Length: 199
Image (cartoon, rainbow, N blue to C red):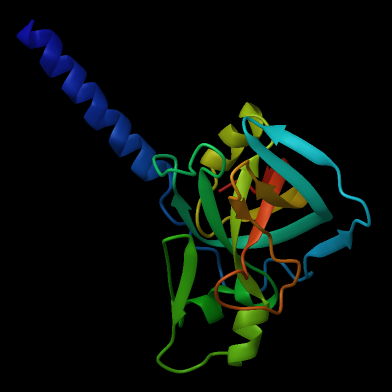
């Protein structure tokens, strides 16, 4: 019995190490990796999708190619079943290692934070060329692909910006602009497709 317990403990430690290594940041060479801005096509009449007791209302079709600046997993949080992870994403010069080496980036509490000693690019460019985005995987396959995404990696995501609501008045609305900051500025994405560049 004791040998079985030790083996199970070692297996858990090994799985933890492998998961940690799986999410280690990549270090791309300097240069803009994602030159194009995200493409958004607003919808006049959004469709409704049901996820358990949560209703998702599509607001816009969304297509983005960006560098992953950071990732934060929320699978064990109260809303983690619906939105298991956030990706902080950057495009334009916010996908360039030469710029990002001068910016400290972190995520906490569903927000993305950055800090600089001196601005490598204008403040407004940092604000409008990066965002924290909440991921709602469309299915188990998309979730598996998102689970493998690493900071520093170039990713292409397609899906819909959505508002989420459930009976009783709870709601979580998406941003529809890349120009906003602060509370309410994050995109809530129903992700239907993930393409990640090989490490």
